[in-house]
Image 1 (cartoon, helix red, strand yellow):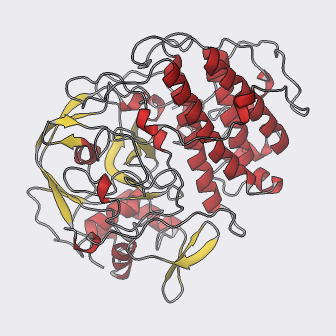
Image 2 (cartoon, rainbow, N blue to C red):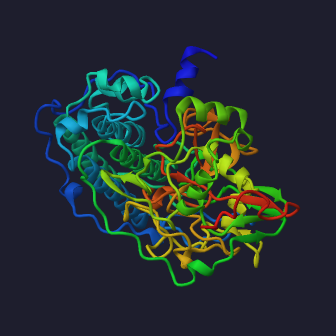
Image 3 (cartoon, rainbow, N blue to C red):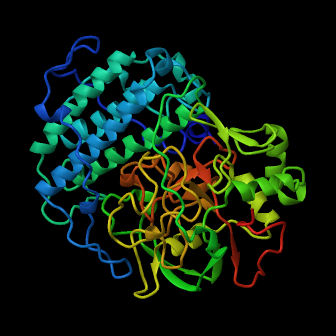
Length: 527
């Protein structure tokens, strides 16, 4: 492996895999110096955000194996949707970067993360690259800064040493880019027909996809910045109301649900804003299996710790045990034993809530727990089948609850809360198999390596997914409380190194039909 390719795998972290392209050198056109006030912008650039019309997300006509998705917005409706999603993303970016002072924005809170000011300018730079230059054909505004914000050129650990834009300059740059983009949305010619522009030129039929891609890019960085907030030291600066309490039936739910064997359609060829690694739709035969009804809870995980789970090498893979010893793992990240388990949550030390899904565990920890419980992690295909298959029609749905867009009653998404809801919550969002919280609350580790689907096509560039395929990365599914709805669906694939714990990850366990239940240390729902 060359040094450059190693840097791509080692330093361009999953979740930020949107490197800048190599652009021809062009003179900056009509743009104020970054230290000066920006040009006046379109009046709507600072318009108050209306709730993004998630019920009208674009979707093309589905192939026979995917559930019909209704009439997709086109023309003016698509313009409104693109603007709403971009404005919603920017509101969250502004919140995450305005609650701390400039010194905090510049500081690197962990070598795993960029300074917040880097993310702030990076999202603006990518928006300029893909929307103003690619879709709009505009000249570069500040081509000299492109290399600074290319995620593949500079590993996170060295980004604080770069001559980055100051917080004021980054805000002004983002403000000017956004004003021009909103003007572009009003003027750009969008193709007639369903807006499935995957694979098409961004200055033509692919324009609608480009706007969705950039909206997803910004909210993915919002989630990354939220993780940085969790890692930062100092007093709490973020707040949010708690999730709703668990429903009355949560305590009486079965420990596991059954998913019958047989084929189902995995992935998508119909979701217009689905990214390349989610495509194409293809049939997969999955034998029958049992899946935890809810994610594994803090109480269940504490039982694993108390039973010596971190001290028994038989429960760990060889690589996992070596990492456990090398890293000194004894509990989830941010946990501390003070006569009872406590955790640090966005600057607040609190008692671990027993019935919430466990957070901040790496793949090796999740796998060891599953072995202790006499079970295993589900495969990626098992997870998606449980989440999407409608047994009545045999079709794969967009979400566990059906094809309709997310609402707050269905799943814990969008940073509405700063923690997972209690296990068993959101019954309205349950899958047909009976599993709850497959979308939202916590990312869920699967046993699967991150690999391409049959017929995969890299687009719009191979660095988004293709360079990460292989056994080095494990797949996570479902999305956590900090994931925005525009970047969360039944086909969405996340991936990361099996050692990573700063992400908002938990898990649930599974067993095959031919494996007897509860043959290990404890049932996953035992408290």
